[in-house]
Length: 137
Length: 137
Image 1: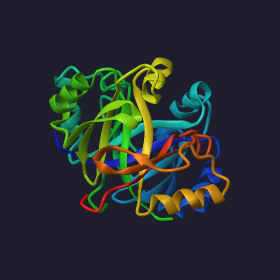
Image 2: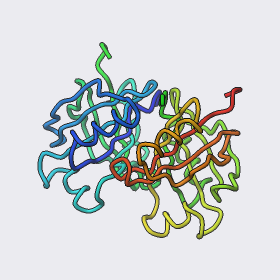
Image 3: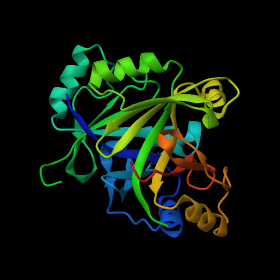
Image 4: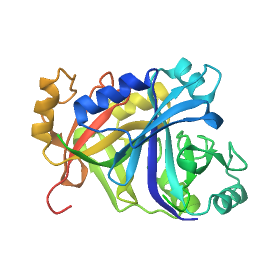
């Protein structure tokens, strides 16, 4: 498997508009994408920075993964996403190494990507997401 | 101020050797730098990924910032670091915007960088570090 980039760092926020306004005011950064991602139960915005993104995630309900995270922890860093060129092969390889996967199969993410989460117990307490971007990205 | 990159994502770990072994075994990534950073009371390793790094931090004592974080939260994502070209100007600008700084002045970080932390209350609960790399980086 080849991880070739930090695709993004996902931050959970209560109020996406307020968080975006602060990023623009303090750092002059505006989102390149903003969309609802049903599979994650979030509205998300992607702030470009170098070859990666800061991803801001506002939950659409209290019952989804980000909604529950916010209830427990408040706002903060939620996950770390690595870009891979073949997510199906990567998941198969990790499963073969005994890694605990949250998603056995990829599901649809933002930007038309295929994504899958790996359990934080695997790698030092960090929730890791794998991302395979579509060819036009 | 211009943030031009995600310099690194800092993860707190109890055992740096064990975490590095897992990154190499599962993802084939090896550290480009490894050093003790006295100002942060840590031993750190930098795993290159695209134009950014995953930084693994093992505290040298229980009383430093990473040691206290681990006691409270266990292993996981600790901070998000943005590269700036002029950290003194950036801190001055943020202070002028009323931002709560942890470091009023830069202090020495790894790789010969100047670093400063911004209070997590500023930006959606995330501990943010600014990094000005030396010219040869």
